[in-house]
Length: 326
Image (cartoon, rainbow, N blue to C red; front, side):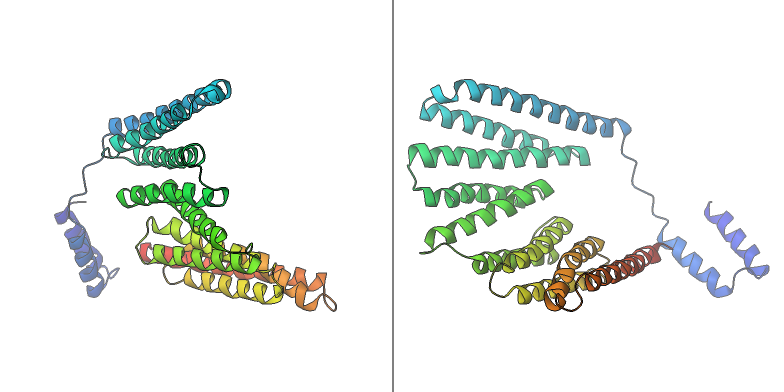
């Protein structure tokens, strides 16, 4: 509807009493703020080319991996050390360079392909570093994990800073966690127990999620989801200590915090993570506290109440998300 037709209809509706003067003013103000011409539509050919490039890239990667597997199975034991390093390095550089060349192209399909290629490159860095550490530098076994994971973490962090792709972010999380944990295990005079491992996982994952929520680590949604999920997993690891009830209580508390954080910003992904955490931790805590008196009935009642609370929370969150568009 053009501007003149809109004004004419508004005048008719105002005279008929359908709209008040205030309603007419609000509609005019809203339309005035939305009259900017929409961005030109993206050509359909460009979208098709992007999807085609993504499919071809995945198929090519599958064939390449299959060929590499056959090649390694037949010839890897006969290759010299430097030939192994060269082969692994070449494949790694190919994946990284291919992702870099595609990075300037637009489109979500190409973006996903770049993320996958760079993630393959990060795995290749770990592979190459492992060959160099084991066969060239003769790194002691206890330092192998920090060396390999640390090398991959450095490259993954750089790639994540360049283009914030979800697969690269997950690779960075895994590599960084492996590097930190491997270093602590290598330095510890005794093998760390459940308390040390659980504390490391819980604290590190919480820091990861907070970094994503603060905008320092992107994409935000995946960083928050991974951080919250592994934070709750860390509390389950803590149940292997001498204080399982305290660990479960901490898990329930953190799950409630995650659910609470999902409401202000309509972060429904946090609601799901927190709800799963409650389903896992609350029945265990109830059974640990009241196993001698209530047992299974209390656990079933708790799960039922949690399901009801989750349904209410999801409904309210959906309503909050739809309200601005209603």
